[in-house]
Length: 378
Image (cartoon, rainbow, N blue to C red; front, side, top):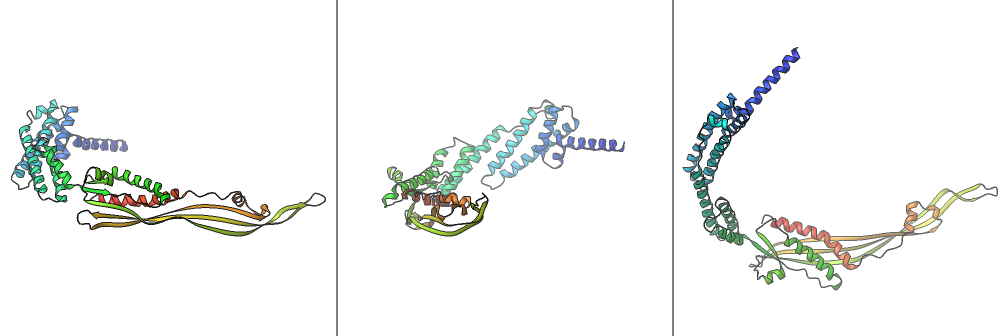
């Protein structure tokens, strides 16, 4: 019986707490008037005669309205250039409260005429757009890339607030191009004939990367021929050159092992009994490594001053490996793995252009990561 009574007490207590949450009473006590109104409206939509929700709505709405109007009055008296955005936000919240109440018949009995500020909201939105536009004009007038970037975002905010305000779209476009860094990427020159095809493929990968780069909208890469055709005057030039590369350095190593195995049947007696003995063999293991490596130099130069902004070198190495073996003596001295190696034959290595391409793969990964890191927040 005590357990049943205790369970009823907890259920009753939970209902009281839950009721306070769903009617908005708790939010009202914490001074969160907007949330309190929303919860009370939700409760009255499901339970139109709920007395607690009715009282909460009546009190919370008046307090919410007074709070937003107070903030509006204070903002109008401030010197904040962007005060109209704060004013706009509070008018939006007041109108939102009215919309919530208007969707609830039981709520309209409590608050018969929730107030809306349609014209005031439109005026504050317009004034907010004007403030952002004027701020953008100021930044754009500073005639430097960083300020142009700020101007772009100010014009973007103005457009979002008032899409047809003055020439905001034109100004936004002008700010964008004033903020952009144009980077011309020069092609890699490889004079050695056998590697020209692989060099072209490496260049294609770089061109693919720069053509799809989008992390920073204010950085645009151009291939050199594209820049020439479009008569682009670069801000920076990114040049890539192999300081040196070596393809096909061959190293062959031979390792000789003396092998023997005991207790191997080596014959039989006249009465057909097995004869056990030791078998021996000499195993020669050959390992061939063909190493190819190179060092790529990346240099970013300011076009006007011809000063180097950034320079870095990226190493890359690829080692092709092959192994095989031969033996002399009794093959029974060899284990299965050793025997399998003796059945392998020396194979031809990849052609030089493939070896060249392989050592450029780690270089490419380092290169694009470095370019991205440098320009992502440039």
